[in-house]
Image (cartoon, rainbow, N blue to C red):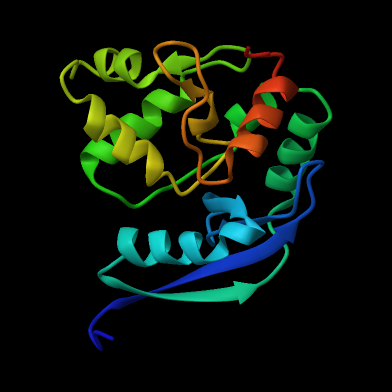
Length: 177
């Protein structure tokens, strides 16, 4: 541990959803920093360490802000636009942040391929880099990487598992073959 590293306190709470329990990580400014499935907790910790490599992260068990909880609940109850109002803050590279920002512009009920997303951010030849950035997304559902599918309309990888990805898409009214 770097003794000169900035100490950052994040607040952690387990959140029940209709398709499994998630872990929400927020900061003192009431922004969501990470959201992942409990069975992906090791991945979440790895991404936090990677995205905040120059900081000393301290995780404290505490209730997440009421507004974030309310908006997550609203999403699960059918208000699919509610998660768009959740304030987020991520680490990551400028390219990753650009990719994640583009993900937030994909509305519920719509999908996009990696190729389309690469073109959307003005980097049409960066398809693999876009796919890798999506795979490093620390804030599942709210930064909706589950809305990315194959160019042929098929399901592609999802850190939370293909079955969950399919359930998320169906929750948003997308039924794939």
